[in-house]
Length: 291
Image (cartoon, rainbow, N blue to C red; front, side):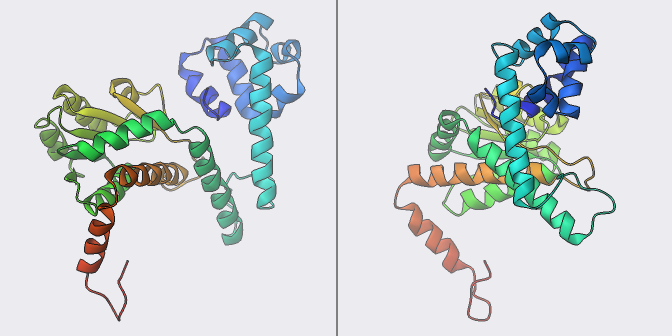
């Protein structure tokens, strides 16, 4: 079960009946209601039946309302602890917030995204990807917009340890490259919502060639996840008031760091030589290396 129950509830919305949707909206609007209310009280508040609330909990993967209630209580407690850690009443960014408040709220959101991603990590899935990358003839990385930055970060890391790896921000070039792969290759696609058409198409083409298709997304039921052989889930909820992907990008980068370390472990001690050689190849600036 996904550790972030509220993310599960949010992703379930498109699939719910009208009555179940009212329950979900109530929980997302004020999660403390579930902690405070018995099942009959919540049903009455949502103008629905006890069986609807129970069925809603089961649709999320819980045995019933009691187990859902415990999960929400845990999520509420973690959120309150995170807010207290930064002296905040809420982590939602407001238009009137000053620099200090923005910094504190973003820090809370991004730390929360990293912690949730780490707790929900599927170790077996990540290890499968790491081992596949180690023996791959070539690795293709797909991602558009903010997810392109994550792909570029992994490209840089893998190239430094001698992997044959490419990422193209041009979706047509990405799809063209994908069509030339085989079962000896790995394709990793990044998309927070898992619905970016160009990224989905590139991974679809790569998988059709026999390449191992990997999706890095926060949406387990997304089109991208549905066509992947392996799914690595990040956990992040973006603030409604944002100018660009923030928490989602941080969560993806944290996940990629874990994957890269695991790849290095599987590659063995000779990786240290590659890292040192690539480090030494960059001319120093003012007596120091730039990065």
